[in-house]
Length: 116
Image (tube, rainbow, N blue to C red; front, side):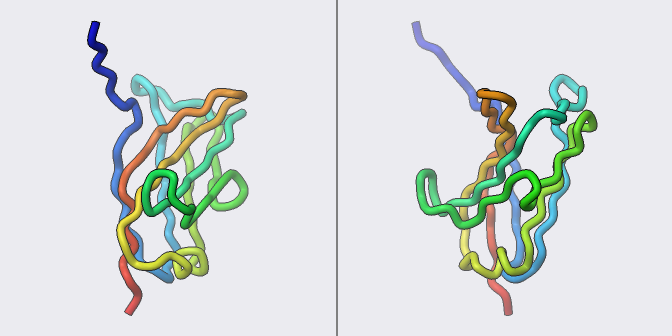
């Protein structure tokens, strides 16, 4: 029996400028209801390709602020962090961990535009 599985993660492509502070706020919902992030941890990871060297890694208290029952996450990379990434197109994922369960909620391209 053939099984057709689809990736449940949402796809959202991001562009930022090298050397600028990058900030993106998101709200996670399931079936229209805010996802409770009270006991969760989060990770935002940027790589050149799957399994490649990490270019940017943000976590709770270090670039990610979770909004508990509101289901919100604020993702922030400093100007110093974006300066360290060469201009180009990368891939990222945004994951939530609750206990032993890890769920990827967002994936996409992470484009860094060169500074002038």
